[in-house]
Length: 230
Picture 1 (cartoon, rainbow, N blue to C red):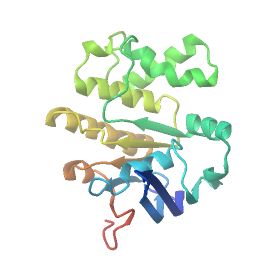
Picture 2: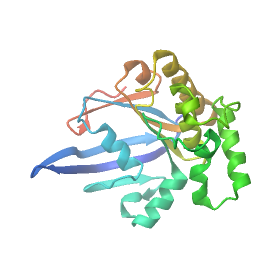
Picture 3: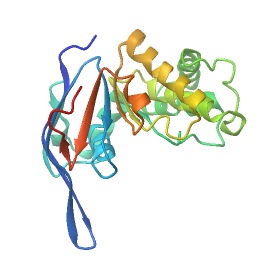
Picture 4: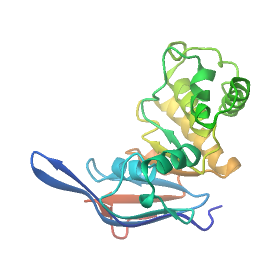
């Protein structure tokens, strides 16, 4: 069940310059995300969905406004502090998995733990636990090329949760999957939200995927579309 506000976005603006023309991708956007909530972000291409996700995950910085997470305004952090915050706070799930083909599943999942200085045995133990949780305990020693698309995405989700992050950001997590695999991934996100209480923010074009969330937020021209949250 959702709790107090975990993420408060206040007046966030992001502008990109293309060909000498400034394009306002996000325009003084305000948004609250509650702890333990599951939110889907929808909107047409260019509406700012992925840009917002990148800002919330500290992969980019806004040009104006504040992003307050757990009472900390991360827009005031220097690069080092921001990188450390991102490593311990955010789990990323991408459309194209971003697995390293030369590493087995368990080693792909264990990669984020290297930032915490854990010994290899402990990293592999935690990675194995995460793979068990996503239903791939029997595929730990397989390379990405030996896995289906749905299994690769499960490995990517295990990698996202292995550090026990405060929240998960999923950018079109089913966009490259067939319907059966997509359903399996959405079921897994449901499980992470329901059983582990994970806060999830998911960008999607799929109404089927969005309907799994507790609320749907529509972006339009860099702002929350009026009367469109559900």
